[in-house]
Image 1: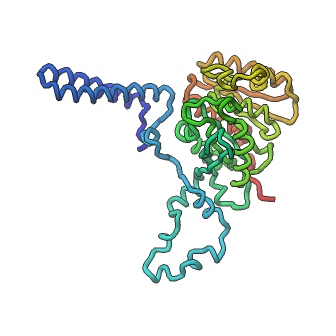
Image 2: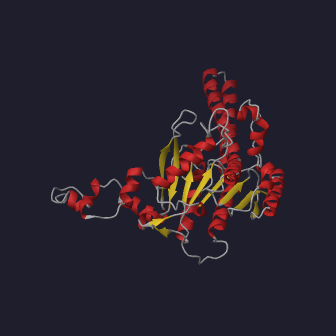
Image 3: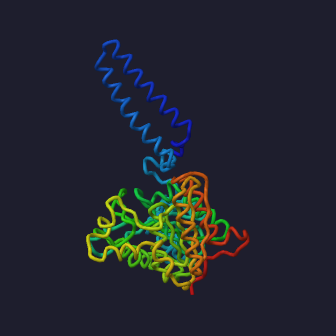
Length: 395
Protein backbone atom coordinates (compact mmCIF):
# COMPACT_ATOMS: atom_id res chain seq x y z
CA UNK A 1 0.00 0.00 0.00
CA UNK A 2 3.06 2.25 0.02
CA UNK A 3 3.21 2.22 -3.78
CA UNK A 4 3.84 5.77 -5.00
CA UNK A 5 1.10 7.23 -7.16
CA UNK A 6 2.99 10.44 -7.90
CA UNK A 7 6.10 8.97 -9.52
CA UNK A 8 6.73 9.65 -13.20
CA UNK A 9 6.49 5.94 -13.92
CA UNK A 10 3.09 5.54 -12.26
CA UNK A 11 1.56 8.63 -13.85
CA UNK A 12 2.95 7.69 -17.26
CA UNK A 13 1.68 4.13 -16.93
CA UNK A 14 -1.77 5.39 -15.96
CA UNK A 15 -1.81 7.68 -18.98
CA UNK A 16 -0.81 4.80 -21.28
CA UNK A 17 -3.58 2.59 -19.89
CA UNK A 18 -6.08 5.42 -20.40
CA UNK A 19 -4.98 5.98 -23.99
CA UNK A 20 -5.15 2.25 -24.65
CA UNK A 21 -8.69 2.13 -23.29
CA UNK A 22 -9.79 4.92 -25.63
CA UNK A 23 -8.11 3.22 -28.58
CA UNK A 24 -9.84 -0.03 -27.68
CA UNK A 25 -13.21 1.72 -27.55
CA UNK A 26 -12.67 3.14 -31.05
CA UNK A 27 -11.56 -0.20 -32.51
CA UNK A 28 -14.51 -2.03 -30.97
CA UNK A 29 -16.89 0.60 -32.33
CA UNK A 30 -15.40 0.14 -35.80
CA UNK A 31 -16.45 -3.50 -35.59
CA UNK A 32 -19.99 -2.32 -34.82
CA UNK A 33 -19.99 -3.86 -31.38
CA UNK A 34 -21.48 -0.73 -29.95
CA UNK A 35 -22.47 -2.16 -26.57
CA UNK A 36 -18.92 -3.24 -25.80
CA UNK A 37 -17.61 0.00 -27.26
CA UNK A 38 -19.82 2.05 -24.95
CA UNK A 39 -18.70 0.04 -21.92
CA UNK A 40 -15.05 0.43 -22.90
CA UNK A 41 -15.54 4.16 -23.48
CA UNK A 42 -17.07 4.47 -20.01
CA UNK A 43 -14.02 2.78 -18.51
CA UNK A 44 -11.78 5.05 -20.55
CA UNK A 45 -13.67 8.13 -19.35
CA UNK A 46 -13.25 7.07 -15.72
CA UNK A 47 -9.55 6.44 -16.33
CA UNK A 48 -9.26 9.90 -17.89
CA UNK A 49 -10.68 11.52 -14.76
CA UNK A 50 -8.42 9.40 -12.55
CA UNK A 51 -5.37 10.25 -14.65
CA UNK A 52 -6.13 13.98 -14.60
CA UNK A 53 -6.65 13.86 -10.84
CA UNK A 54 -3.36 12.02 -10.36
CA UNK A 55 -1.50 14.55 -12.51
CA UNK A 56 -2.73 17.31 -10.19
CA UNK A 57 -1.98 15.11 -7.17
CA UNK A 58 1.54 14.49 -8.45
CA UNK A 59 2.15 18.21 -8.95
CA UNK A 60 1.17 19.09 -5.39
CA UNK A 61 2.45 15.77 -3.95
CA UNK A 62 -0.76 15.75 -1.95
CA UNK A 63 -1.44 12.00 -1.67
CA UNK A 64 1.91 10.30 -2.35
CA UNK A 65 0.90 6.63 -1.97
CA UNK A 66 -1.98 4.24 -2.53
CA UNK A 67 -2.53 4.16 1.22
CA UNK A 68 -2.84 7.95 1.29
CA UNK A 69 -5.35 7.94 -1.56
CA UNK A 70 -7.61 5.57 0.36
CA UNK A 71 -7.11 7.35 3.68
CA UNK A 72 -5.13 4.55 5.31
CA UNK A 73 -2.64 5.49 8.01
CA UNK A 74 1.03 4.85 7.32
CA UNK A 75 1.85 5.63 10.94
CA UNK A 76 1.10 4.00 14.29
CA UNK A 77 -2.27 5.08 15.69
CA UNK A 78 -3.59 4.68 19.21
CA UNK A 79 -6.95 5.36 20.80
CA UNK A 80 -7.15 7.54 23.89
CA UNK A 81 -7.66 4.39 25.96
CA UNK A 82 -4.53 2.81 24.51
CA UNK A 83 -2.51 5.94 25.23
CA UNK A 84 -3.72 5.86 28.82
CA UNK A 85 -2.80 2.19 29.12
CA UNK A 86 0.70 2.64 27.72
CA UNK A 87 1.47 5.68 29.85
CA UNK A 88 -0.01 4.46 33.14
CA UNK A 89 2.59 3.76 35.84
CA UNK A 90 2.92 0.02 36.48
CA UNK A 91 1.24 -1.29 39.61
CA UNK A 92 0.39 -4.76 40.88
CA UNK A 93 -3.32 -4.01 40.78
CA UNK A 94 -3.18 -3.09 37.11
CA UNK A 95 -0.93 -5.92 36.01
CA UNK A 96 -2.27 -8.74 33.93
CA UNK A 97 -1.17 -11.31 36.50
CA UNK A 98 -3.20 -9.59 39.21
CA UNK A 99 -6.24 -9.17 37.01
CA UNK A 100 -6.22 -12.68 35.62
CA UNK A 101 -3.71 -14.91 37.42
CA UNK A 102 -5.08 -18.11 35.89
CA UNK A 103 -4.95 -17.00 32.25
CA UNK A 104 -2.16 -19.37 31.30
CA UNK A 105 -3.73 -22.23 33.23
CA UNK A 106 -6.97 -21.64 31.40
CA UNK A 107 -5.19 -22.01 28.09
CA UNK A 108 -5.56 -18.37 27.08
CA UNK A 109 -2.44 -16.46 25.99
CA UNK A 110 -1.68 -13.63 28.39
CA UNK A 111 -1.33 -11.03 25.64
CA UNK A 112 -4.81 -11.80 24.29
CA UNK A 113 -6.49 -9.54 26.84
CA UNK A 114 -4.17 -6.60 26.15
CA UNK A 115 -5.65 -3.94 23.84
CA UNK A 116 -2.16 -3.10 22.52
CA UNK A 117 -0.13 -5.84 20.85
CA UNK A 118 3.59 -6.29 21.30
CA UNK A 119 4.36 -5.20 17.74
CA UNK A 120 2.49 -1.95 18.32
CA UNK A 121 4.24 -1.45 21.64
CA UNK A 122 7.62 -1.83 19.96
CA UNK A 123 6.63 0.58 17.20
CA UNK A 124 5.42 3.15 19.71
CA UNK A 125 8.59 2.85 21.78
CA UNK A 126 10.69 3.33 18.65
CA UNK A 127 8.87 6.10 16.79
CA UNK A 128 5.89 7.32 18.79
CA UNK A 129 2.24 7.30 17.78
CA UNK A 130 -0.67 9.43 16.64
CA UNK A 131 -3.88 9.72 18.61
CA UNK A 132 -6.87 12.05 18.41
CA UNK A 133 -9.09 14.01 20.74
CA UNK A 134 -12.46 15.65 20.13
CA UNK A 135 -12.53 19.38 20.82
CA UNK A 136 -15.63 21.54 20.54
CA UNK A 137 -16.19 25.22 21.20
CA UNK A 138 -19.30 24.41 23.21
CA UNK A 139 -21.45 26.39 20.78
CA UNK A 140 -22.77 25.96 17.25
CA UNK A 141 -20.30 28.25 15.46
CA UNK A 142 -17.80 25.43 15.02
CA UNK A 143 -18.52 21.69 15.03
CA UNK A 144 -16.70 19.09 17.07
CA UNK A 145 -13.29 18.65 15.48
CA UNK A 146 -10.99 15.66 15.74
CA UNK A 147 -7.60 17.07 16.63
CA UNK A 148 -4.74 14.74 15.68
CA UNK A 149 -1.79 14.57 18.07
CA UNK A 150 1.66 13.05 17.50
CA UNK A 151 3.23 11.78 20.73
CA UNK A 152 6.98 11.03 20.66
CA UNK A 153 8.31 7.68 21.93
CA UNK A 154 9.62 9.35 25.10
CA UNK A 155 6.01 10.16 25.99
CA UNK A 156 5.52 6.42 26.54
CA UNK A 157 8.94 5.40 27.83
CA UNK A 158 9.19 8.20 30.42
CA UNK A 159 5.81 8.80 32.09
CA UNK A 160 7.30 11.60 34.23
CA UNK A 161 8.32 13.83 31.32
CA UNK A 162 6.52 16.79 29.78
CA UNK A 163 7.13 18.04 26.28
CA UNK A 164 7.09 21.22 24.16
CA UNK A 165 4.17 21.52 21.78
CA UNK A 166 3.94 22.67 18.17
CA UNK A 167 0.53 23.42 16.67
CA UNK A 168 0.47 22.88 12.89
CA UNK A 169 -2.39 24.33 10.83
CA UNK A 170 -3.32 22.86 7.45
CA UNK A 171 -4.08 24.78 4.29
CA UNK A 172 -7.28 25.28 2.31
CA UNK A 173 -8.41 23.00 0.85
CA UNK A 174 -7.03 20.61 3.40
CA UNK A 175 -7.40 18.66 6.63
CA UNK A 176 -5.29 17.86 9.71
CA UNK A 177 -4.07 14.53 8.30
CA UNK A 178 -2.33 16.41 5.45
CA UNK A 179 0.58 16.97 7.81
CA UNK A 180 0.97 13.23 8.26
CA UNK A 181 0.19 12.02 4.75
CA UNK A 182 1.72 14.78 2.68
CA UNK A 183 4.24 16.60 4.89
CA UNK A 184 5.59 13.43 6.55
CA UNK A 185 5.21 14.92 10.04
CA UNK A 186 5.24 11.50 11.72
CA UNK A 187 8.67 10.73 10.28
CA UNK A 188 9.97 14.21 11.09
CA UNK A 189 8.72 13.97 14.67
CA UNK A 190 10.20 10.50 15.10
CA UNK A 191 13.59 11.59 13.73
CA UNK A 192 13.69 14.56 16.09
CA UNK A 193 12.75 12.35 19.01
CA UNK A 194 15.50 9.94 18.04
CA UNK A 195 17.97 12.82 18.09
CA UNK A 196 16.90 13.72 21.63
CA UNK A 197 14.45 16.50 20.78
CA UNK A 198 10.96 15.05 21.37
CA UNK A 199 7.99 17.27 20.56
CA UNK A 200 4.24 16.90 20.78
CA UNK A 201 2.82 17.88 17.38
CA UNK A 202 -0.82 18.98 17.26
CA UNK A 203 -2.87 19.07 14.04
CA UNK A 204 -6.24 20.78 14.61
CA UNK A 205 -8.98 21.37 12.03
CA UNK A 206 -9.27 25.00 10.97
CA UNK A 207 -12.46 24.78 8.95
CA UNK A 208 -15.81 23.04 8.84
CA UNK A 209 -14.88 21.03 5.77
CA UNK A 210 -12.00 20.16 3.46
CA UNK A 211 -12.70 23.20 1.25
CA UNK A 212 -13.59 25.72 3.96
CA UNK A 213 -11.22 28.71 3.87
CA UNK A 214 -11.71 30.17 7.34
CA UNK A 215 -8.38 32.05 7.50
CA UNK A 216 -8.51 31.04 11.20
CA UNK A 217 -10.35 34.24 12.11
CA UNK A 218 -13.51 34.93 14.05
CA UNK A 219 -15.57 35.51 10.96
CA UNK A 220 -19.15 35.85 9.88
CA UNK A 221 -19.99 32.15 10.13
CA UNK A 222 -17.41 30.52 12.40
CA UNK A 223 -15.16 31.62 15.25
CA UNK A 224 -12.02 29.65 14.42
CA UNK A 225 -9.59 31.91 16.28
CA UNK A 226 -11.64 31.49 19.45
CA UNK A 227 -11.88 27.74 18.85
CA UNK A 228 -8.11 27.33 18.51
CA UNK A 229 -7.02 29.72 21.25
CA UNK A 230 -9.68 29.21 23.90
CA UNK A 231 -10.55 25.56 23.34
CA UNK A 232 -7.91 23.57 21.47
CA UNK A 233 -4.85 24.84 23.36
CA UNK A 234 -6.38 24.39 26.85
CA UNK A 235 -7.71 20.95 25.92
CA UNK A 236 -4.32 19.76 24.68
CA UNK A 237 -2.62 21.06 27.83
CA UNK A 238 -5.23 19.32 29.98
CA UNK A 239 -5.25 15.99 28.14
CA UNK A 240 -1.54 15.54 27.43
CA UNK A 241 1.73 16.03 29.27
CA UNK A 242 2.71 19.28 27.62
CA UNK A 243 4.88 21.99 29.12
CA UNK A 244 2.04 24.51 29.45
CA UNK A 245 4.04 27.69 28.97
CA UNK A 246 4.53 30.06 26.04
CA UNK A 247 8.26 29.35 25.97
CA UNK A 248 7.51 25.75 25.04
CA UNK A 249 4.58 26.35 22.70
CA UNK A 250 4.89 27.21 18.99
CA UNK A 251 2.49 27.55 16.09
CA UNK A 252 3.04 26.84 12.41
CA UNK A 253 1.11 26.36 9.21
CA UNK A 254 1.29 25.92 5.46
CA UNK A 255 -0.33 27.97 2.70
CA UNK A 256 -3.53 29.43 4.21
CA UNK A 257 -2.44 27.78 7.44
CA UNK A 258 0.82 29.70 7.17
CA UNK A 259 -1.10 32.96 7.28
CA UNK A 260 -3.10 31.53 10.20
CA UNK A 261 0.08 30.76 12.11
CA UNK A 262 1.62 34.16 11.46
CA UNK A 263 -1.52 36.06 12.40
CA UNK A 264 -2.42 33.99 15.47
CA UNK A 265 1.19 33.75 16.60
CA UNK A 266 1.64 37.52 16.51
CA UNK A 267 -1.81 38.28 17.95
CA UNK A 268 -1.29 35.83 20.82
CA UNK A 269 2.33 36.18 21.79
CA UNK A 270 1.31 35.44 25.36
CA UNK A 271 0.66 31.87 24.19
CA UNK A 272 3.29 31.24 21.49
CA UNK A 273 7.01 31.94 21.51
CA UNK A 274 7.71 30.93 17.90
CA UNK A 275 5.94 31.06 14.54
CA UNK A 276 6.58 28.76 11.56
CA UNK A 277 5.11 30.14 8.33
CA UNK A 278 5.31 28.01 5.17
CA UNK A 279 4.17 29.84 2.02
CA UNK A 280 1.58 31.92 3.85
CA UNK A 281 0.38 35.35 2.84
CA UNK A 282 0.85 38.28 5.18
CA UNK A 283 -2.81 39.32 5.05
CA UNK A 284 -6.13 37.45 4.90
CA UNK A 285 -7.41 36.31 1.52
CA UNK A 286 -10.85 34.95 0.69
CA UNK A 287 -12.56 34.11 -2.57
CA UNK A 288 -15.64 36.10 -1.60
CA UNK A 289 -13.72 39.10 -0.29
CA UNK A 290 -13.33 40.46 3.22
CA UNK A 291 -17.04 41.13 3.72
CA UNK A 292 -17.79 37.48 3.01
CA UNK A 293 -15.10 36.44 5.47
CA UNK A 294 -15.81 38.82 8.35
CA UNK A 295 -19.38 39.80 7.57
CA UNK A 296 -20.89 43.13 6.56
CA UNK A 297 -20.09 45.27 9.58
CA UNK A 298 -19.36 48.97 10.10
CA UNK A 299 -15.89 48.29 11.50
CA UNK A 300 -14.87 45.93 8.67
CA UNK A 301 -11.78 47.94 7.72
CA UNK A 302 -10.52 47.96 11.30
CA UNK A 303 -11.15 44.22 11.74
CA UNK A 304 -9.30 43.41 8.52
CA UNK A 305 -6.37 45.59 9.60
CA UNK A 306 -6.27 43.87 13.00
CA UNK A 307 -5.91 40.54 11.19
CA UNK A 308 -3.31 41.68 8.65
CA UNK A 309 0.25 41.21 9.92
CA UNK A 310 1.62 43.36 7.11
CA UNK A 311 -0.41 46.26 8.54
CA UNK A 312 0.06 45.84 12.30
CA UNK A 313 3.56 44.30 12.55
CA UNK A 314 5.28 47.69 12.45
CA UNK A 315 3.62 48.57 15.76
CA UNK A 316 4.40 45.36 17.64
CA UNK A 317 6.46 45.61 20.83
CA UNK A 318 9.67 43.62 21.13
CA UNK A 319 8.37 41.71 24.14
CA UNK A 320 7.42 39.05 24.93
CA UNK A 321 10.30 37.53 22.94
CA UNK A 322 9.11 35.85 19.75
CA UNK A 323 10.98 34.40 16.80
CA UNK A 324 9.67 33.65 13.34
CA UNK A 325 10.69 31.11 10.68
CA UNK A 326 9.57 31.80 7.10
CA UNK A 327 9.83 29.25 4.29
CA UNK A 328 8.58 29.17 0.72
CA UNK A 329 9.38 27.74 -2.69
CA UNK A 330 11.94 29.15 -5.08
CA UNK A 331 9.10 29.61 -7.59
CA UNK A 332 6.92 31.62 -5.19
CA UNK A 333 8.17 35.07 -6.08
CA UNK A 334 5.28 37.10 -4.68
CA UNK A 335 5.11 35.22 -1.40
CA UNK A 336 8.89 35.37 -1.03
CA UNK A 337 8.87 39.15 -1.48
CA UNK A 338 6.11 39.54 1.11
CA UNK A 339 7.98 37.31 3.54
CA UNK A 340 11.22 39.26 3.12
CA UNK A 341 9.37 42.51 3.78
CA UNK A 342 7.67 41.01 6.84
CA UNK A 343 10.98 39.65 8.16
CA UNK A 344 12.52 43.10 7.82
CA UNK A 345 9.57 44.74 9.59
CA UNK A 346 9.70 42.25 12.44
CA UNK A 347 13.46 42.58 12.74
CA UNK A 348 13.13 46.34 13.07
CA UNK A 349 10.76 45.74 16.00
CA UNK A 350 13.25 43.45 17.75
CA UNK A 351 11.50 40.24 16.66
CA UNK A 352 14.09 37.99 14.98
CA UNK A 353 12.97 36.32 11.76
CA UNK A 354 14.75 33.94 9.43
CA UNK A 355 13.78 32.79 5.95
CA UNK A 356 14.60 29.75 3.84
CA UNK A 357 13.62 28.87 0.28
CA UNK A 358 13.32 25.39 -1.17
CA UNK A 359 13.19 24.13 -4.77
CA UNK A 360 9.65 24.12 -6.11
CA UNK A 361 6.41 26.04 -5.93
CA UNK A 362 3.31 26.10 -3.76
CA UNK A 363 3.40 22.34 -3.08
CA UNK A 364 4.30 19.73 -0.52
CA UNK A 365 7.62 19.29 -2.31
CA UNK A 366 8.48 22.55 -0.52
CA UNK A 367 6.52 22.13 2.70
CA UNK A 368 7.89 18.67 3.49
CA UNK A 369 11.53 19.76 3.79
CA UNK A 370 10.40 23.10 5.23
CA UNK A 371 8.77 21.32 8.17
CA UNK A 372 11.93 19.35 8.92
CA UNK A 373 14.09 22.47 8.64
CA UNK A 374 11.73 24.55 10.78
CA UNK A 375 11.61 22.00 13.59
CA UNK A 376 15.40 21.66 13.45
CA UNK A 377 15.61 25.44 13.77
CA UNK A 378 13.06 25.45 16.58
CA UNK A 379 14.84 22.81 18.65
CA UNK A 380 18.38 23.97 17.90
CA UNK A 381 19.33 20.88 15.91
CA UNK A 382 20.72 23.10 13.16
CA UNK A 383 23.12 24.62 15.68
CA UNK A 384 24.34 21.46 17.36
CA UNK A 385 23.68 17.75 17.05
CA UNK A 386 24.57 17.15 20.71
CA UNK A 387 22.03 19.47 22.34
CA UNK A 388 20.29 17.95 25.38
CA UNK A 389 16.77 16.61 25.14
CA UNK A 390 14.10 19.19 25.79
CA UNK A 391 11.65 16.87 27.51
CA UNK A 392 11.36 17.95 31.12
CA UNK A 393 10.28 16.14 34.27
CA UNK A 394 6.97 16.96 35.87
CA UNK A 395 7.36 19.45 38.68
